Image (cartoon, rainbow over all chains, first blue to last red; front, side, top):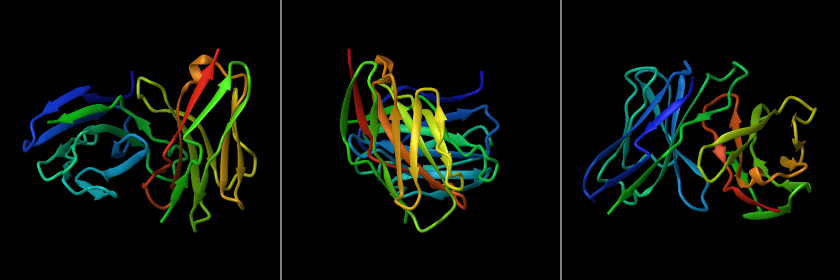
Length: 115
Length: 114
């Protein structure tokens, strides 16, 4: 089965701790994305990556970091600098632009709660 | 900057009836894609339908169809013969040909009444 996996589904952390959210895809997609979803605000882009070892900041990158060492993996670290980390985080992937398959495929999401 | 606006936070429809969800967008580009995604209570985002801006013909997928008005920058979703399983949040999204930055609207919560 081809798809995107995110783990864990629910994650709890204490304030001041860094936490890493996992995202893996076996769709052979070049591009991967991280979004944050808050109630009433839709999805906001945190980071995206078009190729291995390269990534760009989205609108709300502050307090987050990513890496792209493998095509299949795009982990997101929520650092202690992120002021309001409690949210639902969605990972997505897509083929590169110009292929005619630009829609993004989403993982099941991770609900992060920081107390 | 590109923006997407969904002016209906909530909509409801009777089972088997038709409902239209509105979406407007703003971009200075002429080449882009538009999408409608569905997010049921499971929170899994599912692609409903897509439209290429260069195509004049409106996209259809079974009971789902769009009314794409490029000049008006409008992209509404029509759901025919609504089913209980259609109840979800629906997001309109826009992506340019020249970058990977997809913009989403705030969403419309659709309730289907039996």
